[in-house]
Length: 608
Image (cartoon, rainbow, N blue to C red; front, side, top):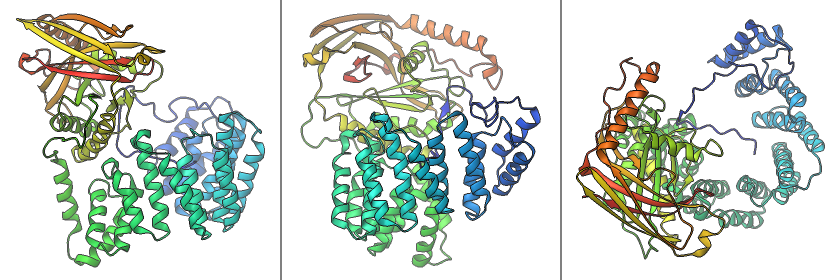
């Protein structure tokens, strides 16, 4: 689809983000050398805050530098989205879109230039005849290819055609073209949820509910929990929207119920659909509670409007919604899970590994940090293991060490997967990113916990026996790995890794978090681990804790001397967290396939 999705909750980046237009653009109408005045004018468009200022500066830029090398997609995007929100009938909308097409045509994909420009007009519900013509042009420009990539691209463009037809009131054509989309899209196309649910919406508009429902069932069957949290959640929200729009509010609520713990505050469609369903069914209290849950963390206008209306209808204008939202936000900020996890039914013995990359100077990491604390408290170590890798992101962190950096490099070996902090993995599989403040911890815990509980149901392919013996400052570790399924050795690169972690470290960093759980101190025997090439193998390794503390101190001291500019105080770390509390130590051993990065089994041992 052509929709733009924005994540409200931030991520601290590994590298400093290059400000838009700080470097010459890679896509430009003219490849001429631009003057510094042109660059500053383009930057001003990108940095302007008010809609009126954006449009004024853009028009001045286009008049003065019509062939500028700094006329980028980003500059035009700001103008198009701004004018579309202010006045879709403004002729500048079409003008900007035409420039956008020229931009794409010169150095990129002409077909997608027409497609994207058509979608801009569609979203603004403006100049739909022109949008239809541009979308048809995009289809005509595409090659009649047979590869999955070519089919996926054609499906995306025909999808634009179908939506514009629907917006123009030609529902029959919209259905016909959207069926083409569904047929064109490859089986693994990530947009298949939207393609089929959009077709269902078109069918419902023509009164063909039975046919629409068959597609909705296909979506639900094809996006079960085994497909992961994101697809499971998105599919159910999309399907529930169709049921709600058709007036079947009971079914909408039933479909949404299983994903309640997976939603983030910016999943507005979930809250809007659920709130509307409750309201239409006369369940006012439930509707208000749904809107409040979202608005207390993300007071988006689309949520605040129905909440304010329903609140005043129920409690009167004199009752303070602001105080209620503030109180609820504070309550969410101090949330922690009650009790501990009790499995329903027998489990096959799979222990699940959750990994968090974080930084004590990272404000968006607070939600993930607190959620991981909750994972440790809620799930027993016989079912769940947690490891937390501290990084110097965005600022120096005294719990960072060479092995935590190596672990980040390991996941980034083929492509940048750990782009910043917080980043989370369950059994070696990347989870949706983003963070937030303390009030967002409950939502993060819901996502992590749901994923962990799904992974617990998988039968382990290997078993691990783990033992550790301490003598003064020396630690000796022994492990036995037994491969239960010989197929696990085929086409894989299995490694046993053993981590020394400290259950709790006290340090108050710049983000205000003072207690840090499951801090990774070292990989015993090194991060490379021990290769597993047969069905049963024994491994031993040792570690001198006093030497480890000395090595950590040397590393932190060297980091201070080589990176003085990164310290706000200019005086280095306020504390060097190299000392290790031997009463807080645990071993976490896990088998990981270095080819797929998937973790096959885990074992946790508390060192007494």
